[in-house]
Amino acid sequence: MRRQARRLRDFGHAVGRFEPGRNNAITDVPGVRVGQTTVLDRERGVYSGVTAIVPPAPVVPAGFHVANGYGKFVGATQLVELGELETPVLLTSTLSTFRVADALVSWVLDHATEPVISLNPVVGEINDSWLSSVDRRPVTAEHVYAALDGAHSGPVEMGNVGGGTGACALGFKSGIGSASRRLDLGGREATVGVLVQANMGGELRLRGRTISPDVAEAHGGDHGSCVVVVALDAGCDTRQLSRIAARGVFALGRVGAAFSHGSGDYGLAFATGAGSLSPAALNLVFAGVMDCVEEAVIDALLAAETVRAPSGRQALALPQSAVPAPD
Image (cartoon, rainbow, N blue to C red; front, side, top):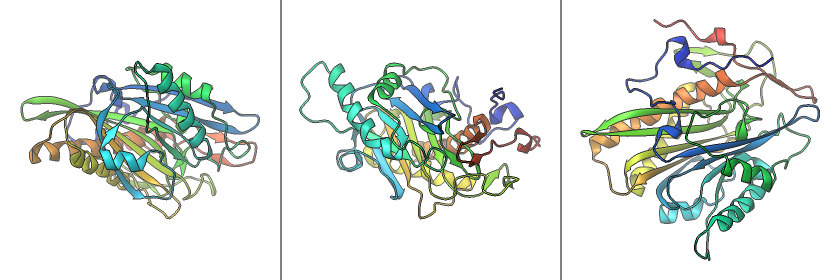
């Protein structure tokens, strides 16, 4: 029986001073859509999938930040050089990365209205092989197309789903998490949203407490990775977006991320409009992003379910009793 998914706010806790959007997810940013395909075979021990974040336009301004480059992030160099995102962002497992990138190119070509002579697919990944060890490349083009074609602007499913199906973080079973904040940027309301593929080592810090699993070897250790994707519906330049992406990665430290040698930690931010933010507005966006990331990681843990793989390894769900009562 699946446990009832609950979010941090269901326990009476709010992170930061800003209000969330309608879904408290990256899809609250107008025009942003998310689709996910889960690749799951419990008998064989396959836990994988793909998560697609689709911007509202074919090309949007973007920024990128690498905290630790022990990972694969297809398309990173052109993204940094030009400051433009020209495909959806796909998140998957390590050795499926290149199949996913190839399928993304095919999907864009299939949907193009004009000839395409160059394309920079953007694909991030996590190493979920600690749980999903029997088939290291389970994601196919059909899974990618299903995620992209099924992308929507409603609530984002979290936990053991899509690119987070095999993820472990901070000692517990983890996965996909998302959150949003509404901001007043000089009299104009804007929304910032994040989606996190959380798979990193460290000790969980939850509302001022350090929480560890009750059993030994209940998680995948420090070899993982984490990808933070940020969307903002305000005019923002590439340099500012790179700094916003960095704050998304910095915020992982709030929940106890170790930023270890074996973890690739990446941030990507894109905006739905061109322009630039004032220093005061940029500070508000920084704060909103960091609050979103903290809440998204905790929600990923609360939504995730225990996995006991045929290999004998297990990733335990965070007990909902671990959430402290509100002050």
